[in-house]
Image: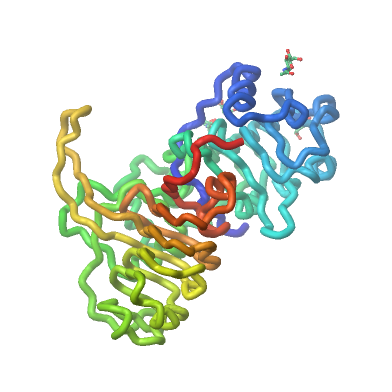
Length: 403
Ligand SMILES: *[C@@H]1O[C@H](CO)[C@@H](O)[C@H](O)[C@H]1NC(C)=O
Ligand SMILES: *[C@@H]1O[C@H](CO)[C@@H](O)[C@H](O)[C@H]1NC(C)=O
Ligand SMILES: *[C@@H]1O[C@H](CO)[C@@H](O)[C@H](O)[C@H]1NC(C)=O
Ligand SMILES: *[C@@H]1O[C@H](CO)[C@@H](O)[C@H](O)[C@H]1NC(C)=O
């Protein structure tokens, strides 16, 4: 079984599915403006209901539930779902005999299946034959802008589903070891699945103000696609020139930067004067710092073609006062990992190799005042820099509703 990381989800929340199917479906249909012709109006998938599945629709609204009544062969599901590339609503596998989720059809160009999951999310519980959920790696989990970025999510009690590969990293056990108690199994992550409704989810807050992370640790979080809900930490002081044989350079300015750096440390600011040095960024894979592109005449961001990962820990810890809970909380002043503003000619902002971003600021990406960047509101809303990562994008220019 391959490793599976649900790096696409912004936040994990317990499922909120109510017992009233038709109310739930109505919620989806009204909030997502579904076409009834493309809505599956049945509370479970069985050989009887599947006949009414909207086979010709590419976008389907449904709470697809596979349970102990599901008596449809997976090969049949594959046929019925052949046209469906977007599922809007919910996906539940509970007490089913399903062995593999590979019956979804991926969109050819991107190799993805799109799941607009913010209403009812994904639940995979008590499937005693389920062994293969690898296709979830190709799922794009979308949330709509007005949904508070929640995607309810749960995977548990699937007795054949092997997730132990996730547990092999020793360092991670250290991380989680004292945060979770009462574990019977030696794999911390298996318990995480149950406890936090999603793996690899770390909360670093209320730590010593000097708490720091090394570049190696940050690289490890990249490998594991760890998602943070808080990351109150700074970079540990380092003087290394190479990590993993890759050249690490500290950014002072682009003029003085070497042109063969693989890893950069510092805030990368590109504004109207930097044009002629941008070639130096072509070999950069990893940025330990934030990226800001502003006031340029650039039309695209090809010079960041090889950028894979941004770990932005900038900001200070300070004590604040939360007026609601009347307790002292730790507040961080931070800026987004990626800020793109006021680029008059910017048409294309794809960072095709970007795979993961750690951002101290809740808005990982802020895009504002780039008048020609999006050709339509839909494009604007669906924009997420790349299809391989899922970031919280604050994009002021988009109108909030879609679908
Ligand atoms: C869905 O099916 C139920 C039961 O057949 C029906 O009462 C309801 O009106 C249907 N909803 C729509 C919008 O077709
Ligand atoms: C699921 O598997 C169990 C055990 O093999 C079997 O008894 C049951 O009939 C199956 N259910 C369906 C809907 O095929
Ligand atoms: C899973 O099974 C357990 C008992 O085996 C049961 O308590 C629980 O309600 C089931 N969960 C779901 C979602 O059906
Ligand atoms: C998992 O199984 C345990 C023990 O059977 C049960 O108490 C728990 O409710 C199950 N979890 C879910 C999400 O159904």
